[in-house]
Length: 165
Image (cartoon, rainbow, N blue to C red; front, side, top):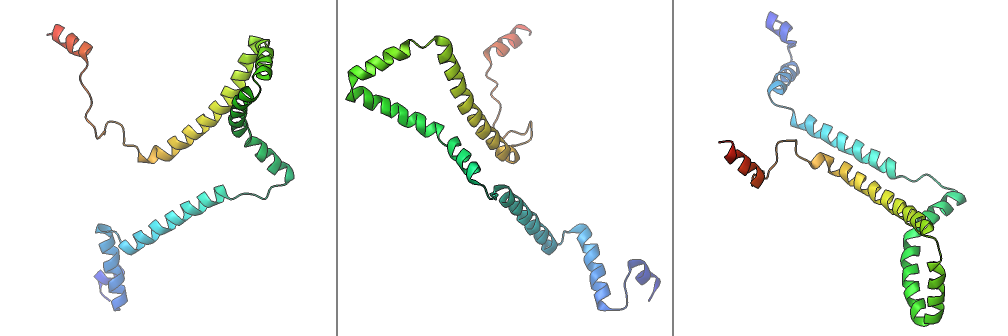
């Protein structure tokens, strides 16, 4: 084996020459097979992580009961509203009597009820909006690289520029 062979790490066999050529070629062009294998491993790891996040732990009776309670407010409010309309048509006198009773409820209690309902549904909506932003984060373009031209039709800016000339 000559001096160049020792420097390059080449043995006298064809395998040594082939591996050396491969290492030198990978400096200039990525090995497609290794790149695809790495891409597959990264994708599989991401999907495995996602599956682990959505895997449900075995729950007991109390956990299932509370989960069921958490699903009740929206259908209860929707069906209750439809029920009020049905009750108003079925028994108008009874309905008006109960509505007069509701009219005696102090405004502070109505504000409290409105705040509770607003916070419940507002927090739920905010949760889904934040999750949507996380999902769309990787699809956004870097700042300053928008695909649409900026709108420069600003009347105040145009007037100011004309005055300063």
